[in-house]
Image (cartoon, rainbow, N blue to C red; front, side, top):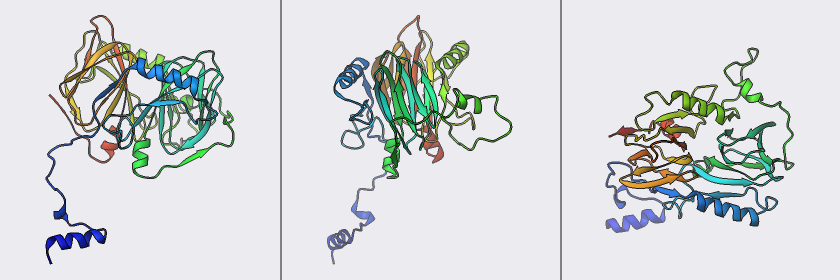
Length: 337
């Protein structure tokens, strides 16, 4: 028998020999995710056109997703682990209630007057607020204001789908009943907590208010900061002090006027949204110029460096990364220049 005959027999039996494939070892990661920048004016124009053409009675949600050019033939998401899209809810509209075992976040970028309901509690939405929807939590959205509201929708769907463990369930009505008082979660899980019981949730629904976040950024603006990311804040789980969610870390950073951070790389992929200001990020030697509203992705193990483009004004970037997954699997690595 020749080796070719053995290879054919193995293939017929759904087997394969180690020798049959190219086993040249890779010395470091070679991501299929590509660096890319999405311009806000293009995103917003398409979203507004969707607002005219897509009814929430026919579509579960009205969102425009970011599709990485390296993943168009694969998972059609921003990275292999994280989906990011931009959602529009017009005045008077209801985005119907459902739940899924994808964990999700909402970061408000335009408008006010709406709320997200999570597990019977209203979380009102202001620009710059971050709202968490832990996995398998009932949630719906309602815009009771007089202007459209737009937010970033981030979730770990690509990771969940790669594991083939996705679950989804619609609610019996378009909206869930509101059963908890305002600010229930922030008081139950805040710094001053009820003493007579212990929370059973590992990841509670929460609203991180922009007013509080920005006050912290300003307070710390005179400190040394992070050499690679300026004044960097992480939205932490108040029960553990750990990651925002088990699969995703949400962070926000201020690049002070004229600030130019150092270059580094890590094995987590990061998606950025420019909340304020303008500047550029150098990714693997290529410059990506950004301004308010733009989104861009830094693939894993890619050298990157942020620079504020103004000598007089701050720049603020919101970001979402899969670092918690890499940390939990002992696969996180970082190095700086």
